[in-house]
Image 1 (spheres, rainbow, N blue to C red):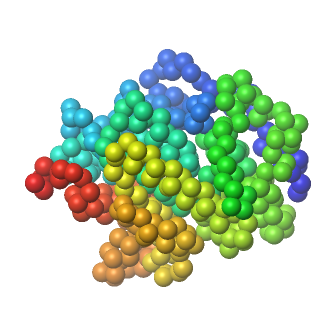
Image 2 (image 1 turned 90 degrees about the vertical axis):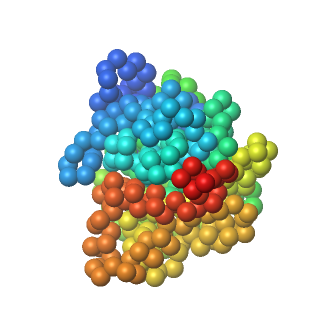
Image 3 (image 1 turned 120 degrees about the vertical axis):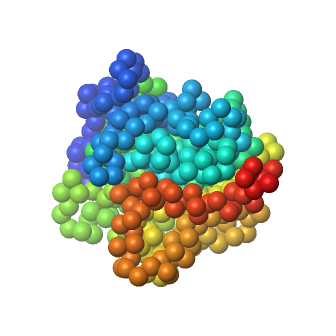
Length: 370
């Protein structure tokens, strides 16, 4: 399959773009986009929604503060000194507002923790959102949560190239290009609503993306599998089954992009007098590989973080420690925590894994530990 044939299968319809660009939310919840909506700088942000994706086939409820943070439940009358940034494992997809790891921590620490995670974000998008939020609504403590595929997402100019047409956030985004030692930050290719309609123009797609390194990697995956139906395009080149194939092509570029974002974040928090904590979180498959003692594909990132002067929590360590006292299989263990994203029990585990680090990191210490 060549680039044009692949792109032809992923042309956006005007109806899909209309739903994504919907700016007048007259209804209480956005039924079409399930919460995702366009943002010219960041690619997309979230609005109030109800989604059919919760535990035991339940619906989940998502609300947002005027600042853009997810709706606060515990200690909501206080000013938050902790802001958290990242993707859906920070936003906590598939659970309702009060079941996030931020809210479990807030209840225990007796202070609010604001959640600025957005589903589908790269590390670079999370950093861009952090810079934007902290300019007008600052906090003294910043948590940056980096999930498996977020490293690869740094390189995405158009998320549909990897995730396929069905992705709710399959649109363009600010991204990073890595060419050898040269790292370049690039803006969203569709910075205005009118620009988004270019995604319905096949000739524009070919002109814009035919030479894109991410698309070329996806085409190589398809070629290596033989004929692959369009509906089965890779959902994430950084997820199980794709890492070995792409290690020499994109993995090192992805990790170099994340290192660049971390260096930019370090500079920002130092200049603004903030404190930083980094979390490494993982898909079910990522934790399964850790429980089976397989090598970490992102070891270069782990090694880099060990040289820094701020705390880093790797959730693989917490899961390995707990699993050591578990009598069942790895799958039985993970069934307690994952429903795609973390279930409420998984977010409680997340909160418990961060608790001690938070107590030591926050200055002054949280009220229950004073």
